[in-house]
Image (cartoon, rainbow, N blue to C red; front, side, top):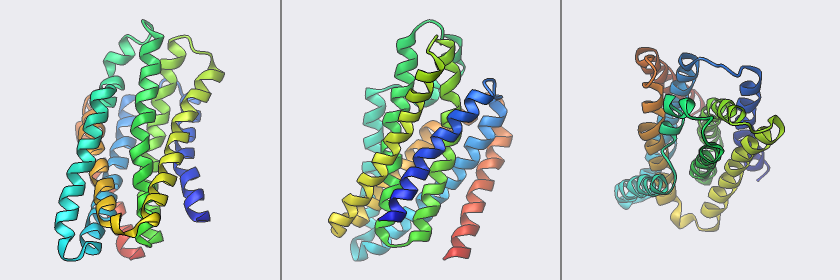
Length: 250
């Protein structure tokens, strides 16, 4: 339990690291953030497949494939529903949001709320990883999610400051998006420990949410500013690092 709690704090704390970087470097280039986010996408892609979906098939026994496929689509549909309730993150994080961030404080607050809401299933994915009993794999999954949180925390700061939010309130609001991830991690962990019967489905569900985030949000965002080639290779590098780590720790 102590390891889970420390991991939850680490995953949420990664957002805080991004927030601090965002305050120090208020004008971070799109190219840099796209490369970092793409690398994180590659790590998350490998983590979703190797750490969540394949174990789902294994733990599900003869029904493993059914659990895995059902869970993947259930996770994707859950985030699809969230996207209908709050704006797409890649739309809010793009140039259009920057162009209009002085027009409405409500838009900026919606931006932060959207990130916070999307962080919940990511946190759950980190927590569910511990349910398999493979601590090394769970830490790799959490590491991939934490890495993705750093550039996410970075991009919150500029729009809020430009909209007139005071630095102290900007810091608190941005930090709260990381707190949501801590809560999600604990929810995911307790859900699978209370009932191990849901573990195969829960693993695939978490994998499906990660695949959805990668495809629907991270890749479009990293390919929107002219850095497609670098972003693609960064994703491949992230996937390879996760693959090598999985084999060496396996």
